[in-house]
Image 1 (cartoon, rainbow, N blue to C red):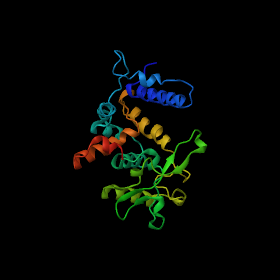
Image 2 (spheres, rainbow, N blue to C red; image 1 turned 180 degrees about the vertical axis):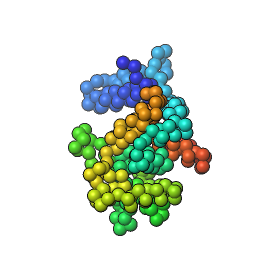
Image 3 (cartoon, rainbow, N blue to C red; image 1 turned 120 degrees about the horizontal axis):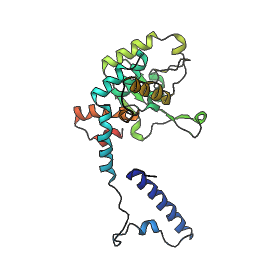
Image 4 (cartoon, helix red, strand yellow; image 1 turned 90 degrees about the vertical axis):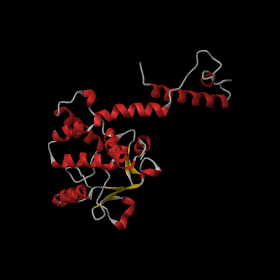
Length: 239
């Protein structure tokens, strides 16, 4: 089976770590994975430059979220609610597991985060955490320390989201989720990927290889940061 260079490097690092453990336990005398990288060998293991590969991958991914492609996807989304979900994802850089956790902000419960209509921002304080079984998923802190953050949003988007929220019935507003399921409970970000994004790509007539993943929508936000702040694209995607 052929794998990408960075995937092969990750496999190799895991194998090397396992052999390091075996050496400490006197199971083996030497770590052949470490020896295989010796510069004295004519044929040795050479790792790809991780940052260069990241940039190469980003260039390829950015072609899938160009303005024309994103517009075609939006035009193929049938409902106003689904358009707002996609628009919020593109304009905030929120991961699916973060966006589905957004509630209406309550300053008395800041630890829950949420969308603050009065100050045009989203406080990211929690995210959905994956588990081996779907039923075991839980709510936890964002992916990294920097994941806890305040994201400014355009006043126009804030107003659209407020109008959308006000129009929801009492059942949908019951638990306070910005984008609840039809039962008023927390939505599933995985369903958004399949039922909104991929279905829109299909409806728009995009080739399968041109479909962006939900994670690639973060590059739309990263690109806007690059344009406005001159930020580094790698650092943007780490937020």
